[in-house]
Amino acid sequence: MENICIRPARPSELAAVAGLRWEWLVENGSEDLGEPDHFVRHFVAWAGENAHTHRCTVVVRDDRVIGMAWLAMVQRVPTPRAPRRASGDLQCVYVVPEARDGGLGGRLVRAVLDEARELGLERVTVHSSSRAIPAYARSGFEESPRLLQARIAPA
Image 1 (cartoon, helix red, strand yellow):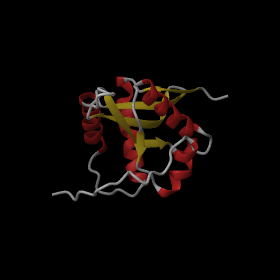
Image 2 (cartoon, helix red, strand yellow):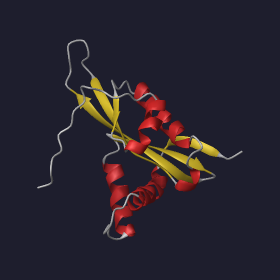
Image 3 (cartoon, one colour):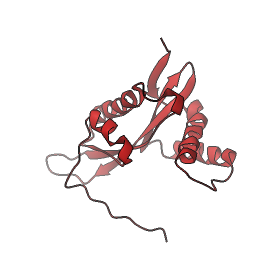
C-alpha cells in the first residue's frame, strides 16, 4: 500500500507546489513561461503573502508532493442573520499524471470541501475543464443557473 497523505501544505513544500503549478501550465499548452526558478521564487512569495485568503492542500506520497488544490476565500457582504459570510473557489487542482485515475483527485477535492465546511463557507465554486466536470460532480458540485461570469479582458 502506498504511503499517501492529504493535508495542508507546509511552508517548506511551497517550492514543490510551485513546480506542480509549472507542470500544470506546461501540460495545458502554456508557452513562453520564462524561467522556472524565477517563477518558483515568485510563487512561494505570493503564497506567503496571500495565506490569509488562499489555502493549499497537498497530496504527499512518500515525502513527495504529487498533487495540490487551492481554496481561495472571499468575505461576503453581511446580512442581519449572517453577519459573517464567506465563500470559496476551488483552484488549481492538479495530480501528477502517473498518479491519476486512482481516486487521489477526488480525495483531494473532498479534503478541500471538508476544510470549507469547517471554515463555515456558504459555497465553493470551481472553474472546470469539460473533462473534469464528472469528477467534480462526484464530489458534490452541481451546475447552477444563477452563477454567471463576465470575462474581463486584460488592459
